[in-house]
Length: 380
Ligand code: PMP
Ligand code: GLN
Picture (cartoon, protein in one colour):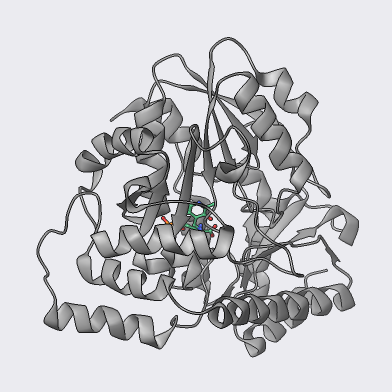
């Protein structure tokens, strides 16, 4: 077997979901909502399945979806894009893999931020690249100019950043996005910005797309995911947004990874992206209520809850909650003995891990969150 993959464990999301199924635990580990997603979008997919084409759509994506992605970012983020800026992929996971494999050459160094989303570094290495990690730490998880500058060498080619960030639930502020743009321009770097959580923002925050900052339009690959925007994580419809020259490079790889994505789902996502602002505001408000509900219940129980700006996730500081166990031991204990699955943050570091934080997914019904908090109260 390819040694680059042979030593890797099964993804922590799958590991914890499996444990949750085996033990019958409430699964606040892997990030997925317990609802079904908007019925009109699912109906649009069903209609297409029955009355539309089910043969190969174009390799670049259905024209209607490419246009809808461009128009959507014009309406929501003020970006001036056209269909030629968009490549449709089978989820953000494929968009990330195709982009990394297209950009990274053997020996190139790639700046990543730990805690790092689990799929980035393995694909960087598969491309022959060398990950260079900038370590972020709680409670702020802030990116500093000094820390990024210290990782840059003449071999640096690419920065991969996730904003808003999974697993921390943090959104980069304007200072951090500006410093990343400054550094990318100064060192002539390409940036892959994984923005799958761009719509799941709280407390009135507005997303800052890196591709819209001065000097970034020609060097940024922005990645999105319908699974996150429409709370249907199983759909695996994603996209790459970039200048046409970069889109063409990523498409060279995409054609040999998946080639295309089921047309009914693409058509339904094209429809969904045109939904009015009320849908997006309602989705955010709903998740914000769930965040506040779980945070309040855990705080009442005595847990130290870290702020969550965005995503379906909040983090708990175990040490500050008076727990001496490391995150992984705690996660294994609570799933087996208390019936709640969580994700240990140490899984997102390759070295010098933060070991006192676990991530909980709050995209669940109120009763589920209340019961999970009740069980977690007993684990303190
Ligand atoms: N990037 C990040 C940061 C994610 O959180 C996720 C999924 N949770 C993905 C990529 C993968 O998205 P998709 O399911 O569209 O492949
Ligand atoms: N991105 C999801 C999460 O953070 C899980 C994705 C997966 O299971 N691969 O929980």
